Length: 201
Image (cartoon, rainbow, N blue to C red; front, side, top):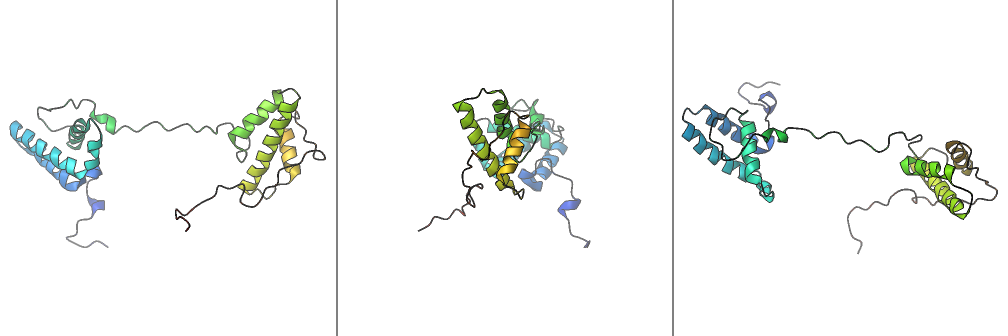
């Protein structure tokens, strides 16, 4: 519904730095329009002091004054002609977005087992027989069973783990279920415990 006389934020120009609010932006626009350079600088100094009160946590940074002047420069769309008390040539760094982080899960054959289990299985393929390999097989198999339970694949049977282990190691590890005993997984063991933040009395 469009009511005449009401000014909606959705119809206004989008703020470049919304944390300072629309009133500060209007002050910046006014400063840009002033004909006298000294008057523009005086107005800019006042605006920077107001900006600091709008975002007081900015004082926690050692170079917060530089940051405020950089922000003022950006909010003026680089149109404020004054003798800047700080170098604002690198102000646009605040508008640049960091590169997306690369996720470490690339190349995982079965995501419900995760990268660590896949790395363990690859290691098992190269290990010579012995107690160290037997212990790693035990740890890996039990982790695989917990992962299946956690992800709710509807199957945590020992045969499923044995089959996956053989397939993912290209047949190098054949789990003998007549000799191997899995750890007992109780309900809730495979999921992290959650708390509501309240301490019990």
